[in-house]
Every structure is written in C-alpha cells, then in structure tokens.
Image 1: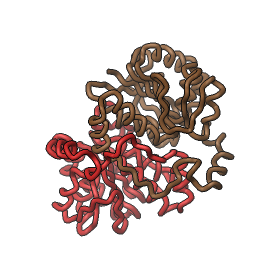
Image 2: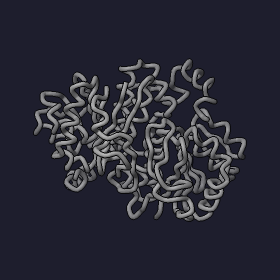
Image 3: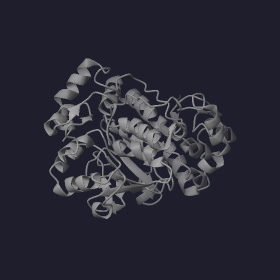
Length: 211
Length: 211
C-alpha cells in the first residue's frame, strides 16, 4: 500500500508529520513525500524543509493521499497541476485524507461535495463554498474521505485510520511507542476551551494566519 | 533567541517537529535545524528527510538546544563531534532539552549527572548508567535541563517551555492555533495504560526499536 503525503511551499510541518509518524507505520506500506517538483519544500515558518522524494507525476495512483494544511494552501487552491493531481489520484485511492486547511484543497478539487468534513477551526466555514458540510469534530470520516481539524489533529486521524486498516492492536502499539499520552500544560486547544479573548484575537487575525 | 534542533541519521521526526511547531513559535526567536553536515538528514523510517540548514560548527552557542531521539541515537552516543558540540553549546545555553532517547545523548555528553530526567519508556533505565535519575513524568524540568518522554511528549514539552519563556497567553495561543485538543482513539499511550501484553511484546523487542 502506497501512502502519498503532499508537500507544497509554506505547508505546516506537524500537519504532515503527525499522520506520517502514525499511519506511516502501517505494516506493508510505503510512505512517499510528493510535491510538484522533487527536493526540499519549505514549511510556513521558513525554518524547516522536508524533502519531496518524488514528483507528483511519478506518483499517479497512491492508495492513500494525505494533504496537510498551512498558509501556503491558499495559492495552491488555484494551482491546476496540484488540483488535477488530487482529482486523478483520488479516482484510485482507497482513502483520501487531509489535516487542517488541507481539506480546503480537497474541497477546491471538488472532492468534498456533499461530504461532512472538518478543517482548522478558523477555516471551517470556508468548506461550505465548495459544497461540503463543516463539522466541529476532530476527525471526520465520510466514506473514504477522512478530514482532521487543525495541525495536531493529524495524529488522532493517523491513529484512527491505522486502527481501521490494521486493527486496534497495531494502532495501540504505535500509540504506545510514540508515547501518545497527551498532557498539555493548558486546556486551550479548541475555540470552545481557550480563553475567549484569545479566540477573538485570532479570529480577527485569521486573514494573516491563513494566507 | 536562537533555538537549535539537532538532526542526525535515523532520528524520529515527530521528536523534532513537536517542539519545532510549539516552542519554535517563541516570539523574537530563530529556529535552526543543525547537523554534523548541512543537507537532508533522513529519519528512522527512511521515508522522510528534514534539511539541516546549518552545520554544528556554524551554530556554536544557541540559547536553546533541542535533541530529538530515535534509533539513530545509539551510534551517536559514541560520536565525539556531536558530543563535543553538545558540551560546548550547553556551556552557553539557557535551556538544554531533549525528547525521547535524545536524553541519552545529553546523558552521554555528561550533562545529566545528578539530574532528574526522562526518556522513552523503553530507554528510561539507561539514564542511570550516566548518573541521571530517571522519572516516569512526561516532562521533567531540573534546572535548565528539560527532558520529555517518548516522541509525542515533545509537544507538551514545547508548550510548557513556551509558557515559561513567553507567558501563558502565548503558549495558549499556540495550543489554540495548533488545535492541540488531543482525542486519541485509544488510551494506550503509556506502559501503565496500554494492554499489558503489548507492553511486554515491545519490551521484549526493545533492542530492535532502540538501535
């Protein structure tokens, strides 16, 4: 089984690395990082680059596609090469997935019409433009489309899909070996839990964060 | 403030990317990925490479050092270039940190003598060899030394240190923007919670996992 993780300029690194480190441990699978061109692809901070080992054209029919989000997703929503690759790949996938605003790329490719889906909380309502039905859940499965909420939700998505594909014990083993027993020092990880003034502050600045 | 994240062959990607995505958002800081030589450094799966933008020699005195773990840590424990860099850098850091078996590298460099520290649960007892006192906590702060448990614990460490350095609101903002409101599909993230037979299975195979 081939798992393709899409990279593009100014993606958010944890969006990609969360599913890589969990779902990527699927037995008898091969994970490939793909981008329009091979070589290092810089994340949104400018401080990190992950190598795209394969070009899109060389990975035409992965079994699983994972699309991370990040501020760089906005210009990609008008990149025909990337959207066409997503459509063509999706025609053959068993699972098409996203983390964070990666779902907006799937939506822009026309793949989420009539589907329940999620995204980064600041981008959730944008899904409606493309005929998707936004939900506030952290991991949403609708048919073969699996979308995760912002950034770190890709870890939960990866474990969920790993359990579906390989069984509970494999997923529990990966959780144990990655010691995923979260103990955040704050309880501020969603707009319903964070201090209201911070939620308002970032809502007001969302145009800066998402593009 | 300069944050240096160390890379070496066969590191575990999430160990590095968890603190990068949290602590790396520290205002007025610069995060640099460093390795013995610049260029792509391959993670333990072989499927992911992060670019080292700077060589160790070019980053002699970072303010914060972050050392990820991974099976590749074992040979590095006898790499004088890397251990000497850790010692020299540590002499000037305000914080010296690790995730997972990265603490064994700090310990091998002689930096954790008499310190409370943690590591991946499978490697915890090895800390004693180097005069450190292992603890089962997820994030351990002893003076300027901050060590995190396995792989995903680096996210909690990053947020904890971010709160210490920049205040609760900055750390809560990063938690909110990375939507770190964990909902793992299983409760198997530590040896005390996972099914006992899986804990035993991986203990028996630890020599394969850690080297």
